[in-house]
Length: 176
Image (cartoon, rainbow, N blue to C red):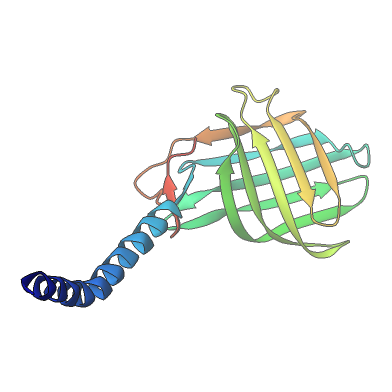
């Protein structure tokens, strides 16, 4: 008979503690998944301007850009002009900035163009050192326009982050 009472008491305590433990473990799982959701990004920034031979139209293309993370947000700008197509692209927002290699950075965002209306874009630049002649620039628009090349003139410079180089929510510094 005594075994039956111990068994009922144990079940009663288990019945009370089980929901509490379930809630606590669920909370810990949510915390763990929130920490895993932190995506590492490059917390540096870049600037650049130059000319390339536009592979799409064969004429000159010129660009001016900056990008990075600052004060908890992506920031930067892009202007691009393809002289052979008379295409002008000007960014209206920066939506992402990340590293694809030690000296290569990607800036993504939205832009207004004079030929294609509002577009999403991706600019990929590589800083291959000074004086910039081996630096590269590529731009892709979401309508299929792509051009790329080594700089004919100008320079891309990848710079170390500073105290203002804090990433947006959901991101952490670390991918370089």
